[in-house]
Length: 491
Ligand code: BG6
Image (tube, rainbow, N blue to C red; front, side, top):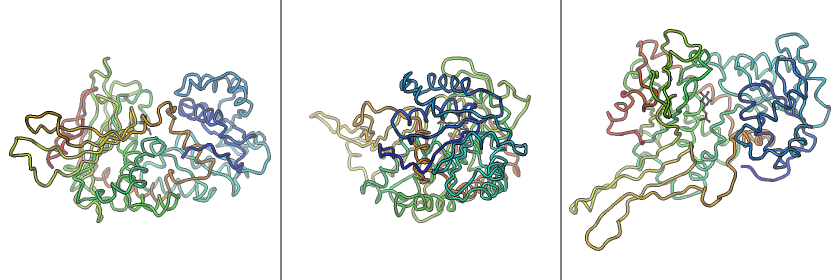
Protein backbone atom coordinates (compact mmCIF):
# COMPACT_ATOMS: atom_id res chain seq x y z
CA UNK A 1 0.00 0.00 0.00
CA UNK A 2 1.21 3.51 -0.69
CA UNK A 3 1.87 5.40 2.53
CA UNK A 4 4.00 8.40 3.23
CA UNK A 5 6.42 6.59 5.52
CA UNK A 6 9.98 7.73 4.82
CA UNK A 7 11.82 5.30 2.59
CA UNK A 8 14.63 3.37 4.21
CA UNK A 9 17.58 4.25 1.99
CA UNK A 10 18.62 0.69 1.22
CA UNK A 11 18.58 1.49 -2.51
CA UNK A 12 20.79 4.13 -3.99
CA UNK A 13 19.89 4.00 -7.69
CA UNK A 14 17.54 2.71 -10.34
CA UNK A 15 18.98 1.77 -13.72
CA UNK A 16 16.35 1.64 -16.43
CA UNK A 17 17.23 -0.50 -19.44
CA UNK A 18 15.04 0.45 -22.39
CA UNK A 19 14.87 4.01 -21.02
CA UNK A 20 13.82 5.53 -24.35
CA UNK A 21 11.13 2.90 -25.07
CA UNK A 22 7.38 3.20 -25.11
CA UNK A 23 6.71 1.78 -21.63
CA UNK A 24 9.37 4.00 -20.08
CA UNK A 25 7.88 7.06 -21.76
CA UNK A 26 4.20 6.37 -21.01
CA UNK A 27 4.45 4.77 -17.59
CA UNK A 28 7.84 4.55 -15.90
CA UNK A 29 9.20 8.09 -16.02
CA UNK A 30 5.80 9.61 -15.13
CA UNK A 31 5.53 7.14 -12.22
CA UNK A 32 9.03 7.85 -10.93
CA UNK A 33 8.30 11.57 -11.18
CA UNK A 34 5.07 11.14 -9.18
CA UNK A 35 6.93 9.23 -6.45
CA UNK A 36 9.53 11.98 -6.31
CA UNK A 37 6.84 14.68 -6.06
CA UNK A 38 5.40 12.85 -3.05
CA UNK A 39 8.80 12.62 -1.38
CA UNK A 40 8.93 8.86 -1.81
CA UNK A 41 12.36 8.60 -3.42
CA UNK A 42 15.38 8.60 -1.11
CA UNK A 43 17.20 11.97 -1.05
CA UNK A 44 20.25 11.14 -3.15
CA UNK A 45 18.56 8.45 -5.25
CA UNK A 46 20.07 8.28 -8.72
CA UNK A 47 18.10 7.51 -11.91
CA UNK A 48 20.19 6.15 -14.75
CA UNK A 49 18.56 5.71 -18.15
CA UNK A 50 20.23 3.32 -20.54
CA UNK A 51 19.59 2.25 -24.10
CA UNK A 52 21.77 1.54 -27.10
CA UNK A 53 21.40 4.87 -28.89
CA UNK A 54 23.97 7.58 -28.11
CA UNK A 55 22.27 10.53 -26.39
CA UNK A 56 23.52 13.36 -24.21
CA UNK A 57 22.08 13.85 -20.69
CA UNK A 58 20.37 17.11 -21.69
CA UNK A 59 18.62 15.61 -24.68
CA UNK A 60 17.55 12.57 -22.68
CA UNK A 61 16.24 14.71 -19.81
CA UNK A 62 14.20 16.80 -22.23
CA UNK A 63 12.64 13.58 -23.56
CA UNK A 64 11.76 12.58 -20.00
CA UNK A 65 10.26 16.03 -19.44
CA UNK A 66 8.15 15.70 -22.58
CA UNK A 67 7.07 12.20 -21.52
CA UNK A 68 5.82 13.47 -18.16
CA UNK A 69 4.02 16.45 -19.69
CA UNK A 70 2.10 14.23 -22.08
CA UNK A 71 1.39 11.43 -19.62
CA UNK A 72 -1.48 10.53 -17.31
CA UNK A 73 0.50 12.38 -14.59
CA UNK A 74 0.78 15.63 -16.59
CA UNK A 75 -1.19 17.48 -13.91
CA UNK A 76 1.72 16.95 -11.50
CA UNK A 77 4.15 18.73 -13.80
CA UNK A 78 5.82 21.76 -12.33
CA UNK A 79 9.05 23.44 -13.52
CA UNK A 80 10.71 23.59 -10.10
CA UNK A 81 9.76 20.07 -9.14
CA UNK A 82 10.92 18.76 -12.50
CA UNK A 83 14.25 20.58 -12.18
CA UNK A 84 14.83 18.77 -8.86
CA UNK A 85 13.79 15.44 -10.43
CA UNK A 86 16.09 16.04 -13.42
CA UNK A 87 19.10 16.44 -11.11
CA UNK A 88 18.76 12.74 -10.29
CA UNK A 89 18.87 11.66 -13.96
CA UNK A 90 21.71 10.75 -16.27
CA UNK A 91 21.85 8.71 -19.45
CA UNK A 92 24.39 6.14 -20.62
CA UNK A 93 24.51 4.30 -23.89
CA UNK A 94 25.32 0.60 -23.39
CA UNK A 95 26.13 -2.34 -25.65
CA UNK A 96 24.84 -5.36 -23.80
CA UNK A 97 26.17 -7.93 -26.25
CA UNK A 98 29.74 -6.59 -26.33
CA UNK A 99 32.40 -7.49 -23.78
CA UNK A 100 32.83 -4.46 -21.52
CA UNK A 101 29.63 -2.98 -22.99
CA UNK A 102 28.33 -2.08 -19.51
CA UNK A 103 31.51 -0.24 -18.49
CA UNK A 104 29.90 3.21 -19.06
CA UNK A 105 27.11 2.17 -16.70
CA UNK A 106 29.56 1.10 -14.03
CA UNK A 107 31.25 4.51 -14.31
CA UNK A 108 27.96 6.41 -14.15
CA UNK A 109 26.75 4.76 -10.94
CA UNK A 110 27.79 6.70 -7.85
CA UNK A 111 29.29 4.61 -5.07
CA UNK A 112 27.21 4.25 -1.94
CA UNK A 113 25.78 1.96 0.69
CA UNK A 114 22.43 1.03 -0.82
CA UNK A 115 21.68 -1.46 -3.58
CA UNK A 116 20.96 -0.76 -7.23
CA UNK A 117 17.62 -1.62 -8.85
CA UNK A 118 17.98 -2.85 -12.43
CA UNK A 119 14.70 -2.44 -14.30
CA UNK A 120 14.54 -4.27 -17.64
CA UNK A 121 11.95 -2.51 -19.76
CA UNK A 122 13.33 -4.12 -22.88
CA UNK A 123 12.37 -6.84 -25.31
CA UNK A 124 12.17 -10.17 -23.43
CA UNK A 125 14.99 -11.63 -25.56
CA UNK A 126 17.34 -9.27 -23.71
CA UNK A 127 16.43 -10.33 -20.16
CA UNK A 128 18.93 -13.19 -19.95
CA UNK A 129 21.81 -11.40 -21.78
CA UNK A 130 21.43 -8.28 -19.60
CA UNK A 131 21.45 -10.32 -16.38
CA UNK A 132 24.59 -12.13 -17.47
CA UNK A 133 26.27 -8.88 -18.58
CA UNK A 134 25.41 -7.23 -15.24
CA UNK A 135 26.95 -10.11 -13.34
CA UNK A 136 30.04 -10.19 -15.55
CA UNK A 137 30.49 -6.45 -15.10
CA UNK A 138 30.52 -6.98 -11.33
CA UNK A 139 27.43 -4.79 -10.91
CA UNK A 140 25.33 -7.28 -8.94
CA UNK A 141 25.60 -7.75 -5.18
CA UNK A 142 23.35 -8.98 -2.40
CA UNK A 143 21.56 -5.62 -2.22
CA UNK A 144 20.74 -5.44 -5.95
CA UNK A 145 17.19 -5.90 -7.22
CA UNK A 146 16.04 -6.98 -10.65
CA UNK A 147 12.70 -5.87 -12.10
CA UNK A 148 11.48 -7.57 -15.26
CA UNK A 149 8.46 -6.99 -17.42
CA UNK A 150 6.46 -9.76 -19.04
CA UNK A 151 6.66 -11.97 -20.96
CA UNK A 152 9.10 -14.32 -19.29
CA UNK A 153 9.54 -16.81 -22.13
CA UNK A 154 7.01 -17.92 -24.70
CA UNK A 155 6.33 -21.34 -23.20
CA UNK A 156 7.30 -23.40 -20.17
CA UNK A 157 10.70 -24.47 -21.51
CA UNK A 158 11.81 -20.98 -22.54
CA UNK A 159 10.44 -19.42 -19.34
CA UNK A 160 12.41 -21.94 -17.30
CA UNK A 161 15.56 -21.09 -19.24
CA UNK A 162 15.14 -17.32 -18.73
CA UNK A 163 14.45 -17.88 -15.04
CA UNK A 164 17.53 -20.10 -14.76
CA UNK A 165 19.81 -17.51 -16.34
CA UNK A 166 18.34 -14.74 -14.17
CA UNK A 167 18.91 -17.06 -11.22
CA UNK A 168 22.64 -17.28 -11.90
CA UNK A 169 22.93 -13.51 -11.35
CA UNK A 170 20.14 -12.78 -8.85
CA UNK A 171 18.62 -14.79 -6.00
CA UNK A 172 14.84 -15.30 -6.36
CA UNK A 173 14.27 -12.92 -3.43
CA UNK A 174 15.97 -10.17 -5.49
CA UNK A 175 13.73 -10.66 -8.55
CA UNK A 176 10.55 -8.63 -9.07
CA UNK A 177 8.48 -9.89 -12.03
CA UNK A 178 5.93 -7.24 -12.88
CA UNK A 179 2.34 -7.87 -13.79
CA UNK A 180 1.02 -4.32 -13.88
CA UNK A 181 -2.56 -5.55 -13.35
CA UNK A 182 -1.60 -6.33 -9.76
CA UNK A 183 -0.81 -2.65 -9.21
CA UNK A 184 -4.30 -1.47 -10.18
CA UNK A 185 -6.27 0.10 -7.35
CA UNK A 186 -9.31 -2.12 -7.87
CA UNK A 187 -7.13 -5.20 -7.47
CA UNK A 188 -6.02 -3.90 -4.06
CA UNK A 189 -9.68 -3.43 -3.26
CA UNK A 190 -10.48 -6.98 -4.31
CA UNK A 191 -7.92 -8.24 -1.79
CA UNK A 192 -9.29 -5.96 0.91
CA UNK A 193 -12.85 -7.01 0.10
CA UNK A 194 -11.95 -10.67 0.46
CA UNK A 195 -9.50 -10.56 3.34
CA UNK A 196 -10.44 -7.51 5.41
CA UNK A 197 -14.16 -8.39 5.67
CA UNK A 198 -15.63 -11.44 7.30
CA UNK A 199 -18.98 -11.43 5.50
CA UNK A 200 -17.83 -12.64 2.07
CA UNK A 201 -15.66 -15.58 3.09
CA UNK A 202 -18.53 -17.98 4.03
CA UNK A 203 -20.05 -17.26 0.60
CA UNK A 204 -16.80 -17.45 -1.39
CA UNK A 205 -17.10 -21.02 -2.63
CA UNK A 206 -18.99 -23.50 -4.78
CA UNK A 207 -21.96 -23.60 -2.37
CA UNK A 208 -22.90 -19.96 -2.97
CA UNK A 209 -21.17 -19.02 -6.22
CA UNK A 210 -22.57 -20.15 -9.54
CA UNK A 211 -19.75 -19.01 -11.79
CA UNK A 212 -17.08 -16.34 -12.21
CA UNK A 213 -16.30 -14.22 -15.27
CA UNK A 214 -13.08 -12.35 -15.94
CA UNK A 215 -13.04 -10.02 -18.94
CA UNK A 216 -10.28 -7.77 -20.22
CA UNK A 217 -11.67 -6.11 -23.35
CA UNK A 218 -9.69 -3.54 -25.32
CA UNK A 219 -10.83 -1.25 -28.12
CA UNK A 220 -7.32 -0.78 -29.48
CA UNK A 221 -5.93 -2.99 -32.22
CA UNK A 222 -2.42 -4.36 -32.29
CA UNK A 223 -1.18 -0.99 -33.54
CA UNK A 224 2.48 -0.86 -34.48
CA UNK A 225 3.32 -4.09 -32.63
CA UNK A 226 2.09 -6.50 -35.32
CA UNK A 227 5.22 -8.66 -35.69
CA UNK A 228 5.59 -9.08 -31.91
CA UNK A 229 1.90 -9.66 -31.41
CA UNK A 230 1.58 -12.10 -34.26
CA UNK A 231 4.25 -14.31 -32.72
CA UNK A 232 2.42 -14.08 -29.38
CA UNK A 233 -1.39 -13.95 -29.60
CA UNK A 234 -3.97 -13.12 -26.95
CA UNK A 235 -3.52 -16.34 -24.97
CA UNK A 236 0.18 -15.75 -24.34
CA UNK A 237 -0.02 -11.94 -24.21
CA UNK A 238 -2.93 -11.56 -21.80
CA UNK A 239 -4.20 -14.85 -20.35
CA UNK A 240 -0.85 -16.29 -19.25
CA UNK A 241 -0.22 -13.17 -17.18
CA UNK A 242 -3.02 -10.71 -16.37
CA UNK A 243 -6.10 -12.95 -16.54
CA UNK A 244 -4.54 -15.86 -14.66
CA UNK A 245 -3.23 -13.51 -11.98
CA UNK A 246 -6.72 -12.06 -11.53
CA UNK A 247 -8.14 -15.58 -11.38
CA UNK A 248 -5.61 -16.44 -8.67
CA UNK A 249 -6.64 -13.46 -6.53
CA UNK A 250 -10.32 -14.41 -6.81
CA UNK A 251 -9.77 -18.12 -6.18
CA UNK A 252 -6.91 -18.26 -3.66
CA UNK A 253 -7.28 -19.31 -0.04
CA UNK A 254 -6.76 -16.63 2.62
CA UNK A 255 -2.99 -16.26 2.98
CA UNK A 256 -1.34 -16.61 6.39
CA UNK A 257 -0.41 -12.92 6.22
CA UNK A 258 0.06 -10.13 3.72
CA UNK A 259 3.61 -11.18 3.09
CA UNK A 260 5.29 -12.10 -0.19
CA UNK A 261 5.63 -15.81 0.54
CA UNK A 262 2.19 -16.21 2.09
CA UNK A 263 0.37 -14.47 -0.79
CA UNK A 264 2.36 -16.17 -3.51
CA UNK A 265 2.11 -19.63 -1.92
CA UNK A 266 -1.68 -19.35 -2.16
CA UNK A 267 -1.63 -18.02 -5.72
CA UNK A 268 0.56 -20.81 -7.03
CA UNK A 269 -1.74 -23.43 -5.45
CA UNK A 270 -4.57 -22.09 -7.62
CA UNK A 271 -2.40 -22.44 -10.73
CA UNK A 272 -1.60 -26.02 -9.74
CA UNK A 273 -5.34 -26.69 -9.41
CA UNK A 274 -6.30 -25.56 -12.91
CA UNK A 275 -7.72 -28.50 -14.81
CA UNK A 276 -5.59 -28.97 -17.94
CA UNK A 277 -7.30 -28.09 -21.21
CA UNK A 278 -6.09 -30.67 -23.72
CA UNK A 279 -6.69 -31.69 -27.32
CA UNK A 280 -9.80 -33.50 -26.04
CA UNK A 281 -11.32 -30.36 -24.51
CA UNK A 282 -10.03 -27.39 -26.51
CA UNK A 283 -13.02 -27.50 -28.85
CA UNK A 284 -15.56 -27.20 -26.01
CA UNK A 285 -13.50 -25.04 -23.62
CA UNK A 286 -11.82 -22.48 -25.86
CA UNK A 287 -12.72 -20.02 -28.60
CA UNK A 288 -10.10 -18.23 -30.72
CA UNK A 289 -10.94 -15.12 -32.72
CA UNK A 290 -9.28 -12.61 -35.03
CA UNK A 291 -10.74 -9.19 -35.89
CA UNK A 292 -11.72 -8.18 -39.38
CA UNK A 293 -12.41 -4.64 -40.62
CA UNK A 294 -15.17 -2.79 -38.80
CA UNK A 295 -15.89 0.33 -36.76
CA UNK A 296 -14.22 1.09 -33.50
CA UNK A 297 -15.05 4.11 -31.34
CA UNK A 298 -16.84 5.80 -34.21
CA UNK A 299 -14.15 5.34 -36.87
CA UNK A 300 -13.41 2.74 -39.51
CA UNK A 301 -10.88 0.24 -38.21
CA UNK A 302 -8.75 -2.10 -40.31
CA UNK A 303 -8.81 -5.84 -39.86
CA UNK A 304 -5.94 -7.65 -38.13
CA UNK A 305 -4.42 -8.63 -41.49
CA UNK A 306 -4.49 -5.05 -42.78
CA UNK A 307 -2.66 -3.50 -39.80
CA UNK A 308 0.71 -1.85 -40.53
CA UNK A 309 3.40 -4.49 -40.93
CA UNK A 310 0.90 -7.36 -41.22
CA UNK A 311 1.57 -10.51 -43.25
CA UNK A 312 -1.09 -11.53 -45.81
CA UNK A 313 -2.23 -14.47 -43.69
CA UNK A 314 -2.01 -15.38 -40.02
CA UNK A 315 -3.75 -17.74 -37.66
CA UNK A 316 -2.83 -15.76 -34.51
CA UNK A 317 -5.74 -15.03 -32.16
CA UNK A 318 -6.52 -11.45 -31.14
CA UNK A 319 -9.39 -12.77 -28.98
CA UNK A 320 -9.68 -15.75 -26.73
CA UNK A 321 -12.44 -17.05 -24.47
CA UNK A 322 -12.00 -19.99 -22.11
CA UNK A 323 -14.00 -22.08 -19.72
CA UNK A 324 -11.66 -22.86 -16.86
CA UNK A 325 -12.15 -25.30 -14.02
CA UNK A 326 -10.34 -25.07 -10.70
CA UNK A 327 -10.10 -28.55 -9.25
CA UNK A 328 -10.06 -28.05 -5.51
CA UNK A 329 -12.50 -28.23 -2.58
CA UNK A 330 -13.51 -24.60 -2.74
CA UNK A 331 -14.23 -24.36 -6.46
CA UNK A 332 -15.16 -27.82 -7.73
CA UNK A 333 -17.99 -27.40 -10.25
CA UNK A 334 -17.74 -23.58 -10.55
CA UNK A 335 -16.82 -22.48 -14.07
CA UNK A 336 -14.47 -19.53 -14.46
CA UNK A 337 -15.08 -17.92 -17.85
CA UNK A 338 -12.17 -15.86 -19.12
CA UNK A 339 -12.15 -13.66 -22.21
CA UNK A 340 -9.92 -11.03 -23.63
CA UNK A 341 -9.54 -9.41 -27.00
CA UNK A 342 -8.46 -6.43 -29.03
CA UNK A 343 -10.76 -4.20 -31.10
CA UNK A 344 -13.81 -5.04 -29.06
CA UNK A 345 -16.87 -2.85 -28.60
CA UNK A 346 -15.85 -1.22 -25.32
CA UNK A 347 -12.78 -0.98 -23.13
CA UNK A 348 -13.70 -2.82 -20.01
CA UNK A 349 -11.84 -4.98 -17.50
CA UNK A 350 -13.98 -6.62 -14.88
CA UNK A 351 -14.48 -9.59 -12.64
CA UNK A 352 -18.04 -10.80 -12.11
CA UNK A 353 -18.88 -13.10 -9.22
CA UNK A 354 -22.28 -14.55 -10.04
CA UNK A 355 -23.99 -15.95 -6.97
CA UNK A 356 -26.50 -18.78 -7.10
CA UNK A 357 -30.20 -17.90 -7.28
CA UNK A 358 -32.33 -17.86 -4.13
CA UNK A 359 -33.33 -21.47 -3.37
CA UNK A 360 -37.05 -20.70 -3.54
CA UNK A 361 -39.01 -17.73 -4.85
CA UNK A 362 -41.74 -16.80 -2.40
CA UNK A 363 -42.79 -13.99 -4.78
CA UNK A 364 -43.53 -16.27 -7.73
CA UNK A 365 -47.24 -16.26 -6.79
CA UNK A 366 -47.32 -12.46 -7.30
CA UNK A 367 -45.51 -12.67 -10.63
CA UNK A 368 -42.11 -11.54 -9.46
CA UNK A 369 -38.89 -12.98 -10.81
CA UNK A 370 -35.74 -12.95 -8.69
CA UNK A 371 -32.35 -12.11 -10.18
CA UNK A 372 -29.38 -13.82 -8.59
CA UNK A 373 -26.94 -11.51 -6.78
CA UNK A 374 -23.89 -10.33 -8.67
CA UNK A 375 -20.68 -8.85 -7.33
CA UNK A 376 -19.04 -6.75 -10.03
CA UNK A 377 -15.43 -5.70 -9.59
CA UNK A 378 -14.64 -3.20 -12.30
CA UNK A 379 -10.98 -2.46 -12.97
CA UNK A 380 -11.26 -0.31 -16.10
CA UNK A 381 -12.13 2.23 -17.37
CA UNK A 382 -13.45 3.23 -13.94
CA UNK A 383 -12.66 1.38 -10.73
CA UNK A 384 -15.60 0.29 -8.63
CA UNK A 385 -17.15 -2.60 -6.81
CA UNK A 386 -20.89 -3.13 -6.97
CA UNK A 387 -23.10 -5.73 -5.33
CA UNK A 388 -26.50 -6.10 -6.95
CA UNK A 389 -29.33 -6.88 -4.54
CA UNK A 390 -33.06 -7.37 -4.98
CA UNK A 391 -35.30 -4.80 -3.31
CA UNK A 392 -38.92 -3.86 -3.16
CA UNK A 393 -39.78 -0.78 -5.20
CA UNK A 394 -41.65 1.85 -3.15
CA UNK A 395 -45.44 1.87 -3.55
CA UNK A 396 -48.56 0.77 -1.69
CA UNK A 397 -50.40 -1.43 -4.12
CA UNK A 398 -48.42 -4.45 -5.04
CA UNK A 399 -45.10 -6.15 -4.57
CA UNK A 400 -42.69 -4.96 -7.24
CA UNK A 401 -39.16 -6.24 -6.99
CA UNK A 402 -36.14 -4.83 -8.76
CA UNK A 403 -32.37 -5.04 -8.71
CA UNK A 404 -30.41 -2.21 -7.09
CA UNK A 405 -26.66 -1.83 -7.09
CA UNK A 406 -24.99 -1.41 -3.72
CA UNK A 407 -21.92 0.60 -4.60
CA UNK A 408 -18.93 -0.52 -2.57
CA UNK A 409 -16.47 1.64 -4.44
CA UNK A 410 -14.17 3.92 -2.53
CA UNK A 411 -14.30 6.67 -5.13
CA UNK A 412 -16.95 8.56 -3.22
CA UNK A 413 -15.33 8.05 0.17
CA UNK A 414 -11.93 9.19 -1.07
CA UNK A 415 -13.05 11.74 -3.64
CA UNK A 416 -10.26 14.03 -4.79
CA UNK A 417 -7.64 11.28 -4.63
CA UNK A 418 -5.46 11.29 -7.71
CA UNK A 419 -5.85 8.23 -9.91
CA UNK A 420 -2.43 6.64 -9.94
CA UNK A 421 -0.57 4.82 -12.69
CA UNK A 422 -0.31 1.22 -11.48
CA UNK A 423 3.48 1.38 -11.93
CA UNK A 424 3.74 3.92 -9.09
CA UNK A 425 2.70 1.28 -6.61
CA UNK A 426 4.85 -1.39 -8.22
CA UNK A 427 7.96 0.83 -8.20
CA UNK A 428 7.39 1.84 -4.62
CA UNK A 429 7.03 -1.81 -3.62
CA UNK A 430 10.38 -2.54 -5.29
CA UNK A 431 11.98 0.30 -3.33
CA UNK A 432 10.45 -1.06 -0.14
CA UNK A 433 11.54 -4.58 -1.04
CA UNK A 434 7.98 -5.89 -0.87
CA UNK A 435 7.43 -8.53 -3.52
CA UNK A 436 3.90 -9.63 -2.47
CA UNK A 437 2.40 -8.22 -5.68
CA UNK A 438 5.09 -9.57 -7.98
CA UNK A 439 5.05 -12.92 -9.69
CA UNK A 440 7.28 -15.66 -8.32
CA UNK A 441 9.21 -18.06 -10.53
CA UNK A 442 7.00 -21.08 -9.74
CA UNK A 443 3.88 -19.06 -10.64
CA UNK A 444 5.30 -18.13 -14.04
CA UNK A 445 6.25 -21.71 -14.76
CA UNK A 446 2.94 -23.18 -13.53
CA UNK A 447 0.95 -20.77 -15.68
CA UNK A 448 3.04 -21.54 -18.77
CA UNK A 449 2.59 -25.25 -18.20
CA UNK A 450 -1.18 -24.81 -18.27
CA UNK A 451 -1.07 -22.45 -21.28
CA UNK A 452 1.21 -24.86 -23.18
CA UNK A 453 -1.50 -27.53 -22.88
CA UNK A 454 -4.00 -25.26 -24.66
CA UNK A 455 -1.56 -24.34 -27.40
CA UNK A 456 -0.71 -27.99 -27.88
CA UNK A 457 -4.44 -28.78 -28.05
CA UNK A 458 -4.98 -26.09 -30.69
CA UNK A 459 -2.08 -27.47 -32.68
CA UNK A 460 -3.24 -31.07 -32.43
CA UNK A 461 -6.83 -30.29 -33.44
CA UNK A 462 -6.01 -27.52 -35.93
CA UNK A 463 -8.49 -25.17 -34.20
CA UNK A 464 -8.77 -22.07 -36.38
CA UNK A 465 -9.45 -18.45 -35.46
CA UNK A 466 -13.04 -17.29 -35.91
CA UNK A 467 -13.48 -13.84 -37.49
CA UNK A 468 -15.21 -11.01 -35.61
CA UNK A 469 -15.73 -7.48 -36.88
CA UNK A 470 -13.73 -4.72 -35.17
CA UNK A 471 -16.03 -2.98 -32.69
CA UNK A 472 -18.10 -6.10 -31.94
CA UNK A 473 -18.30 -8.24 -28.82
CA UNK A 474 -16.07 -10.94 -30.32
CA UNK A 475 -16.92 -14.12 -32.20
CA UNK A 476 -20.42 -15.51 -31.63
CA UNK A 477 -18.83 -18.80 -30.56
CA UNK A 478 -17.78 -17.04 -27.35
CA UNK A 479 -21.45 -16.52 -26.52
CA UNK A 480 -22.13 -20.19 -27.12
CA UNK A 481 -19.27 -21.08 -24.75
CA UNK A 482 -21.22 -19.75 -21.77
CA UNK A 483 -24.76 -20.36 -23.04
CA UNK A 484 -24.10 -24.08 -23.34
CA UNK A 485 -23.98 -24.09 -19.56
CA UNK A 486 -26.95 -21.75 -19.08
CA UNK A 487 -24.75 -18.69 -18.43
CA UNK A 488 -24.31 -15.43 -20.30
CA UNK A 489 -21.54 -12.86 -20.36
CA UNK A 490 -22.09 -9.77 -18.28
CA UNK A 491 -22.44 -6.78 -20.66
C1 BG6 B 1 -0.02 -5.63 -21.87
C2 BG6 B 1 -0.26 -6.34 -23.18
O1 BG6 B 1 0.59 -6.48 -20.95
O2 BG6 B 1 -1.26 -5.17 -21.35
C3 BG6 B 1 -0.96 -5.44 -24.17
O3 BG6 B 1 0.99 -6.77 -23.73
C4 BG6 B 1 -2.22 -4.87 -23.56
O4 BG6 B 1 -1.28 -6.14 -25.37
C5 BG6 B 1 -1.93 -4.25 -22.19
O5 BG6 B 1 -2.73 -3.88 -24.44
C6 BG6 B 1 -3.23 -3.86 -21.49
O6 BG6 B 1 -2.93 -3.14 -20.31
P1 BG6 B 1 -3.97 -2.07 -19.72
O7 BG6 B 1 -3.41 -1.68 -18.40
O8 BG6 B 1 -4.03 -0.96 -20.73
O9 BG6 B 1 -5.28 -2.79 -19.63
